[in-house]
Amino acid sequence: MGTMKIGMPVKVKLDEQVEEIEGVSDAADFLQRWPVERRGHVYRSALNACSAAITAQISESDAMKAFTGFARVTGILLAEGGPAMPEAGPVHGRMPNPVRHLPK
Image (cartoon, rainbow, N blue to C red; front, side, top):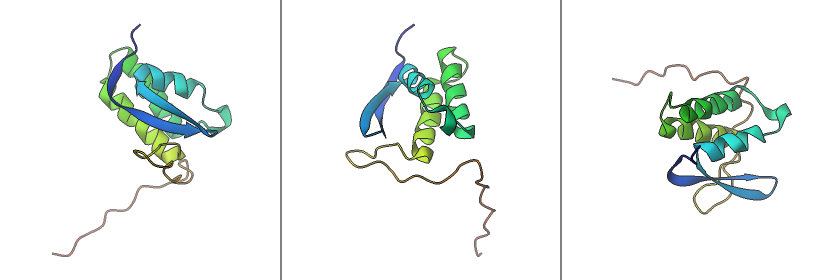
């Protein structure tokens, strides 16, 4: 199997170690090493997306978007040339924002 690289690498920082995730295979490998006690809905969505991209069921781009979302939500995504983005808080308890009506 190839390495499935797309676009710019996604940089993540976990336990003071920075990794460059260059494609779907790297993302799936990283997710397999993710701590079991921290695996939730967003983790499963990212892992499922990577698996689907590897079997050509979805695009690699969509899978990397799912992985990037996972990295952002868990607070491990590095901004370009900067520190990790702040953690958004627990995902399992988050409710969608209600529809906001704009004045006419």
